[in-house]
Amino acid sequence: MDAFYELLSTLPIIDDADGPCHDAKKQPWLETRMANVQGVADARWDDVRIFLEAHRQKSLGAAASRLGIDTSTVSRRITALEASLGVRLFERTREGLLPARGAERVLAAAESMEAAHGRLKRDASDVEAQAEGIVRLSADPGMAELFIAPALVRLRAKYPKVHIELDASAQPRDLTRHEADLALRSVQPRGAELVTTKLLTAKWLPASAPALVEEIGRVSSWNDPPWLAWDKDFASFAPARWVTANAGKAEIVLRTSHFSAQLAAAEAGLGVALLPTMFIRARRLEEVRYTKTLASSIHACPSSDVWLVGHRILRDVPRVAAVWSFFADELRAVTEAA
Image (cartoon, rainbow, N blue to C red; front, side, top):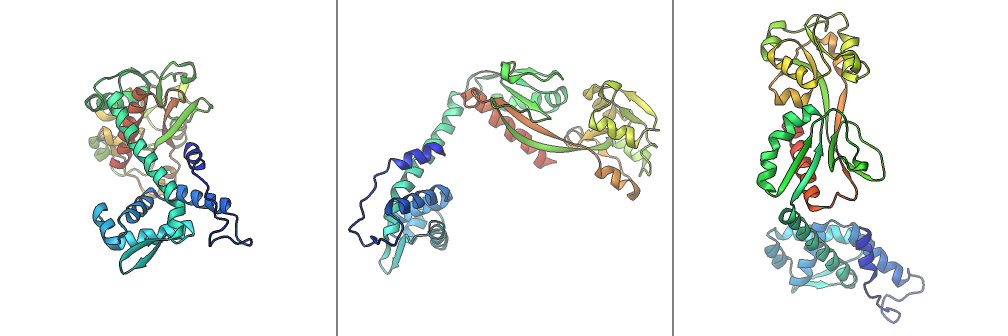
């Protein structure tokens, strides 16, 4: 956006000293002009696009036909844009639209926005055309196995020249030291050199194989079913603390800090595990049914986030940008499906 304002600042300033708007009691022309520029910058692109077509066609109907929308929508959006800018853009006459002085004031800025939008679309196309090379991606074993690896066939179909080096260790890699290009993290890292975006939030819930869920029925105490628990090295992990607090007297049939092992054991019906909802859906497990007396404990179940993290200087490199946008879409789709 800073570049956009810089572009707008280069537009010529019209000397309106002798014009009908000259009035010592009114806002100076430069301030009025910059207020209009600010308004155009803040306006929705769809409204600006409609304004430009209306200005070129000088007719609501012709503009609507060119844009593939109805005339009432064109009229309504122009009125909304006029309200947003605080100026009248057109006089409606029997012959069509007559551009008002306000339209001429904002026309150059609107055309600059149109040009910037065109460059944005071309740049987005260039990412798909130019993306090639190796991208090093770091993710924990569970994410890598269940979501990243299966999605790579779709990534390859979209970006055939991009190749992935997947680090699926539980030990997070330091992106500031270029140990990876991108990473999926459960905790948002801090640092001026990093860019992050949160992809999803998943709640952890008691779940197991459908057969075991059917066998144990509706539980009234979390101590009743057999459990899969975390080992002592993960005692401070929020899901481990929930199991200890709510199923401290339960039979622990498996204790392991290997998430994929817990998931596989739950899928086999060995016991109940506290698992993120996205993994429950992906493995076709079922949530354990419970009585109303356990509702508060379910409300207290932990949640975890998934953050996509990259190094600022690499974020716009085509191969990295392609993988970033691909996995952002893939994992957000997981949330929608759940």
